[in-house]
Image (tube, protein in one colour):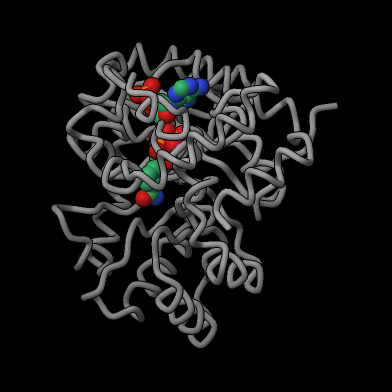
Length: 314
Ligand SMILES: NC(=O)c1ccc[n+]([C@@H]2O[C@H](COP(=O)([O-])OP(=O)(O)OC[C@H]3O[C@@H](n4cnc5c(N)ncnc54)[C@H](OP(=O)(O)O)[C@@H]3O)[C@@H](O)[C@H]2O)c1
């Protein structure tokens, strides 16, 4: 029997992007999704913003590929539109209404799975934001409310408002989490546990950094060397992270474990994630998804290896 692990989601942030020229037609997206479904993945992650270099194309391609049709077997989870370079003002009642109306129309569905706030809006009163999401839930436009990228204090205040006003509380939090990005472990994940909120981890491979390609100097042609992947280079392309990749290689190479396999198996079985949580896999090609799902199916890493990997950040 396959080892139990967090639910796997498939991320569609690069659909329609110049970072993934092979994923710009509904036919190509449909082919990829058929492969993804064959692997047992039924949850898709998108956003009104995706991809950042061609806003809206991910939802448009998913809609054109009829990924949300009941027969497709997928649940589509999306996020309220982030317009421009700042998220301020994007979670007002009007903005949330307009974004959800447009997402449902574009996707050709009546309801999404999780409807997320994509990023903090520091201008709209938090009371209005919570009311806006409650309204969408009450209208039946989503199965659940999610929050992504909110800092701890803002999430705490949001939850307090929901309790006070009897609004639907978020039941999912989406944040960046992988073996070298573990800041959320200290306080945010414990807060989620206290409120029974599931954690869905994005960038399990640090946008590809954990494959070791950038450290080895052979990342040409991958997302990491594209001008659009600046965010990942800003986060990970630093000497201390390259050192961690080298140390990781030293630990796993003698055992024939690949860096991507180690990263995904660590996250699925040795991190703070639980079975009820989620991991969003990102990939440009179906072969990568196959490889990643196969790695996770191998189950936990040998205990001594897991300990050494966990200690890389301590
Ligand atoms: N809420 C948010 O703010 C937020 C932010 C970021 C992402 N997300 C969500 O999370 C999803 C996944 O994020 P991510 O794309 O950053 O995930 P990731 O798993 O960290 O990175 C995916 C990239 O890693 C490389 N890769 C994947 N499998 C590989 C393998 N087996 N061997 C070698 N390289 C491999 C591929 O790029 P190359 O082939 O080019 O190297 C792939 O595009 C997104 O699509 C989106 O849905 C959400």
